[in-house]
Amino acid sequence: MGEKPKIAIVHDYLVDRGGAERVVIALSRAFPDAPVYTSVYVPQKTFAYFAGQKIFYSRFLTFLARLCGARERIFPLILLYFWRLNLRKYDIVISSSSTFAVQVRHPRHYCYCHTPARFIWRSADYNLAKNPLKQFFLNWIAFFVKPFDLAAARHIHLFIANAENIRKRIQKTYKKKAIVINPPINCASFRPVKKTGGDYFLALSRLKKYKNIDLAVKVFNELKLPLRIAGQGSEKKYLRSIAQKNIKFLGKVTENRLRKLYANCRAFVFPGEEDFGITPLEAQASGRPVIGLGRGGLLETVLDGQTGLFFAEPTAQSLKKTIQDFLKKENKFSSSVIRRHAERFDERVFRKKIIYLIASSHEK
Image (cartoon, rainbow, N blue to C red):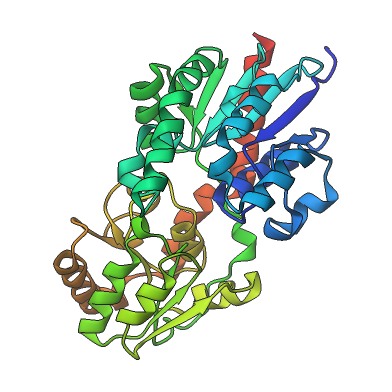
C-alpha cells in the first residue's frame, strides 16, 4: 500500500461567507491534513472555521486589497500570484476556483470550478459595473487575462464542475471535459418545523443588480404579501426606496437567525439565475419550498411541483403568476419530502464523492 499523498487546497480569496467558501471548508474536512493556499485572507469577513486551519496567503495582496477597497483593482497581481505559486512539494492540488486559482501549475491539479471567471467570459450578463469607466477597466483586464486563463485550463489534470450547466460552460469555454459533483450543504444545521410555515416569504441574497431582487420587491409590492429580505449590497438603497411597508430588509443576519428565518417562512423566493445556488438548498433542508427562476443551477436543485415552483421568465408578470399558483397549492407541499430531497446534497455525500474521485484518479 502506497504512502498517503500530500494534498494542498487552493482558493481564489477568503474574504466572503458564500457557497464557494463552504466548498473549501468541506474540502478541508475531507482532507484534514491539507493546508489552504489563497491570495487575500481577511478572517473577519469569512467563516470562523478558517481561523483554526493552516492558511497560507499573501500579506502584501491582502494589504493592497484593503487599501484599494476592491479586489478587482488588483486582479492582475492576484493572477500573477497564483501563476507563480510553487506547490510542487505536494502530490495533489485541489483548487476551488471562479477566478484565478485555476492558474496554479501542477501535474495533478484538480480544479473544482464554480464557473469560468465571470468577469472574463460573462461580464455583460453579471453587470459587474454600473459606471462606464469601471466597466472599461474590467474589460481591459479581461482582454489581458483571457489568454492566461485559456492556457491555465490546458494544464488542468481534471475539471470538477459544481453543476451540469457549469460542466457545459467548461466544455464551451475551455474545450475540456468535467465531472459534476454538486456543492454541499450541512443538512444537520437546518431543522424543519412541524407547522406549515410563518406568514412571510423570504429572500436571501447579496443585493446586486444581477440577483433580480428588485423583481421580487415589485411583485410583492403589488400582491401586498409580507416579504423579508436578508443580505447586503450596492442595491440596498435603491431597493428600500421602491419597497412598500409589507417588505422588511433585515441586513446581515447571524447563522442562528437565518436558520429560524428559513424554517418559519412560507416559501423561499429566488428570482435570479445562479450557477448553482446554495440558499435554495438550505431552504429545502429546512423543509420549505422554493419559488425560483427556472434557469441555471436551480434546475438541478429544485423539483418543480414537488419541492418548489419555477417561473419561466425574469419578469414581474411571470413571477406574480407563479406566486399566485403557489398560494393555491401551498398545502400540497410536504416538508418531509422537501427535506429528503435536500439530503442528497449533504456534506457527507460531497466528501464521499470527492475522496473517491481523488483516490481513484491518483491510483491510475
